[in-house]
Image (cartoon, rainbow, N blue to C red; front, side, top):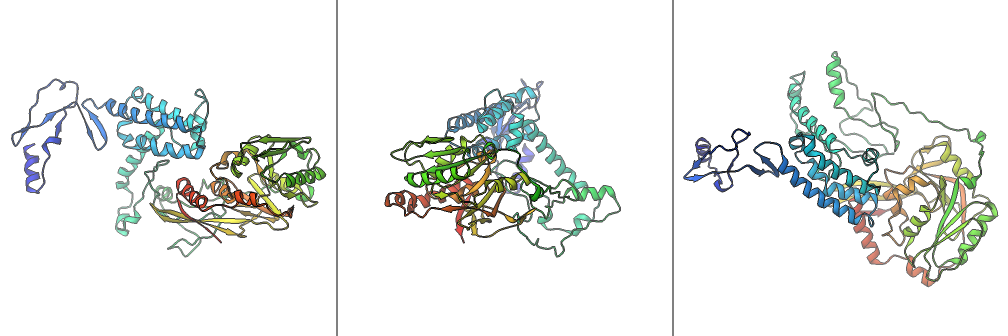
Length: 521
């Protein structure tokens, strides 16, 4: 200690003696009496001490630190349990990443390699949090829940962090010493980003938008060729190469040195339906202050589809009884809003698909549900297929522009911008969002959900929440008509957004998706 003190003095540094402690590690030295004085001040001997957020004990069994982590996570799990009834799955996942994941990630490669019996309480709390996020029973198996959430179990997280540490140490022993002499930029250093932690940030690289062409800076060619006479060295380089297929698909990724894309396309001229459309599709709608238009819609449906089930979510102030065969009428509290009604209607769908229509639409000879089902069956990766209203498709694309770390990015909604065509169906194109007339897979839409906090004009927000989860297409050959009825003053009062509604929507976008602005064009 005296030598350390002298070194501090020579380098014009000061030693805070009140914060300096002594720990004797090992059981044999537990009762040993050691006294150390620096400048006449005795250094206090302790059995444990917190250093950079980690409590170090004299036996290095980390029990004190684990108990501290247990108490912190336990309180966070209680918070999740209290808010699970008012938040959706995505919001609960964000809370987990904010309140629990940082405690599990921080220095876990140090204290997480202790005895398994000491860590069991931490893992039990993590499993309890996962069940709360997915709103399952306390006895349900958690393995599929971890996979669905893309969250590592605590034991796997410890192994992952430990491996990263070992890899970082072994990077000093590359087979080619001249590798370091060729580049000296800090950008050449390989950076790792821990998963599912809001405190970590993306690795160094170049981000491109899906479904669009991007030129990678520094590469003039479309191919990257790596040659080496050493198979061992070549494999070592390939481990550090990340790439994306030129053919984007929302549910696939490249797993090898080359990718093969297979499309299974049904011949539409020999595609027959051997089932009743009513067993596959349910029509869903929401009505508010427009009973006359709703009745016209129902009559037009029955003209072309006499047995198909229709679900009506109703939040009128003075509900009327809607009668008819295969009609399910669900009455809500008054003026709950568009998305609350959508959630209710879709939650009652039991068929594979549902067709969403507005309550003032009108079925015609061109409203062929079978054609939309044909596309969905032929391309099972699709989740939503939209049609056209009065021959207008009203599709749009969403383009994200990354912004500053604290401010968030911007999302651009560009109308009538279509992307790739759907294989085998040249009249259909991929898009980010479609009009209010669409066929969707029930399970896919139920996973994304409609945010009930949005009560007025919020159709685009559903597709914003589904960006990265839903594969959307638009087909112009299936059309529905629109009733020409003037909107009442009372209806316009509830439909048109107020200024505070627009401000709330922007605040919600920032909280949910870290967006500072939404731009339309």
